[in-house]
Image 1 (cartoon, rainbow, N blue to C red):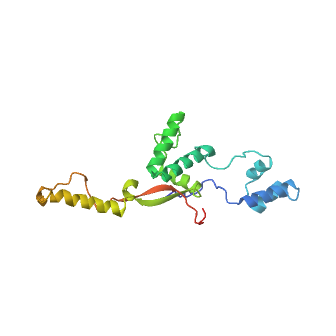
Image 2 (image 1 turned 45 degrees about the vertical axis):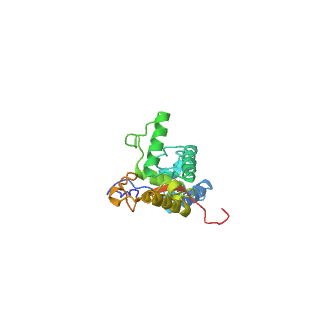
Length: 205
């Protein structure tokens, strides 16, 4: 879960007004309906902020800039969507490794990433930004080839196994049958969260 910041006592106050309030205050000052200070007091917007907005200073979005450009994030999204359709969905760790590999190939170092490896919080925010295209779902840890085995193939396997055990009438005793095919055989292979292409609920899509 993303961190929730709690302001310290006596710390600087951050934005407590809406974009609509800011636009209205700018419009009133530009239209000479009220003074700059009066608009600041009326809409509870800092005087400096309002002045900068009117004079078109500091036009960038507030907060820390995103690490990747929009086209770079779009490329990462398309890559994960394609792999999920091929039956090899990413998990959060795979997303971390992919982004770090990309940064290393670009020769970029991101100060807020430890060892240039994105944090879980960054990954969660990335998925939130692209929630219309990607979804995090719980899936079983099973290969696609295994999941596609049909009932006829299972029946054929046991028919062949029966013929092998019977050994032309000389049945092989159970104590001479060993399993070398599966290591740590378990009924529950486990589950984990993977990233998939979000599918629309609309039937035609």
